[in-house]
Image 1 (cartoon, rainbow, N blue to C red):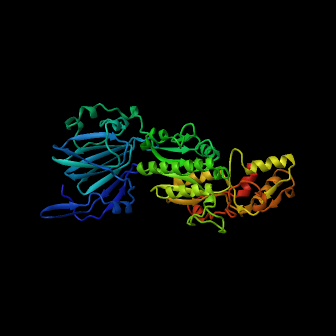
Image 2 (image 1 turned 60 degrees about the vertical axis):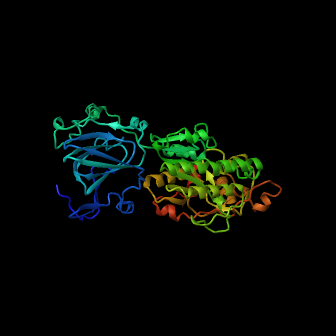
Image 3 (image 1 turned 90 degrees about the vertical axis):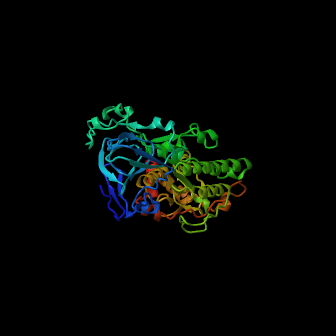
Length: 469
């Protein structure tokens, strides 16, 4: 078979999701030929995942008819023929609807193919002295072999049309003994780990991902972010995303000596360790931020506004945000005035309304409520849709209100007199109290999250639903 010179670099999708064949430009003359077997910038422009290869392997095969596979490995691989010609066959052995899908084709030195983790790879040489190269994104180890999934080359369901019948081909004894498709245990997909799963947002994330076996939930008892063993005792190669819903949120206590240390430990030091894990293992890190990273002097806070935190809590959140910002694959979800399952402002006001209390509530801090069901839904949207990595503001929608306005709404919805709520300014409310400084304006610009395809619900609607009205 003669190699076709000077083809254009081209990608062709196959019947197996994620498996893509590439035609490579090969330049030749009377001396031989030259090709760019792997060129990251050009490949990414064609849509190849940035799978960050770390090891290059070569399989040399002396005789035509040498047949190897079908092996599904726990890493992605980019494979190509260095010299010679092969018949390649690939079978999807991943959990999911495409399990058992088959694709086969002939490849020469002018072609390559990308094979995602869990897709079985096999080839048969059609010429003597054929070399087959693997560019992979994990280091081979003896331990990793225990994570392989195998399929018999002669499987009747796959029904691969080997050019050289297997009875006349060169096979290893191991490949002859691999199971048929009905006996194959599919390779499980990578998982998402939700940290802080027992908090207000964590509980909402449990509901958002209910029934999804690919999501693990870890409360503090399962994953203490301040303990070394939490980071070293887990095989991070099996995860695709970490959603960090854990944080130190005691705003006033953070101003004390003990609280300051605890806030920095959880909001900065622990986040730094998660960022290192995410970077080292190519994991997407989802981290939840706060309006407290701003001083509240802007009428509407955008994702690009510089940090201007007023107190210790805001300073630790800003520092954590800066760390997360350097993780290659990250979603920084900035929210405000969180309301979920557990003690919160709305529940407190509803209880006071039920008891006939006439409270004084701050009327010069402006913002929007963020209900945890919408934060969780927004996070899932970003991850599932593959939205562009970066920072996204996420609160509920509607006109910004003061805490006093919201308290009056709670009273009215609860059947009490909204005029029972008296508004006072922040200085008066906190006079004589040990309290952290608060931003006076916490309203977030929601344009970016909406442009990604997610529309946060109106805060007033969610408030009525929350109160059962």
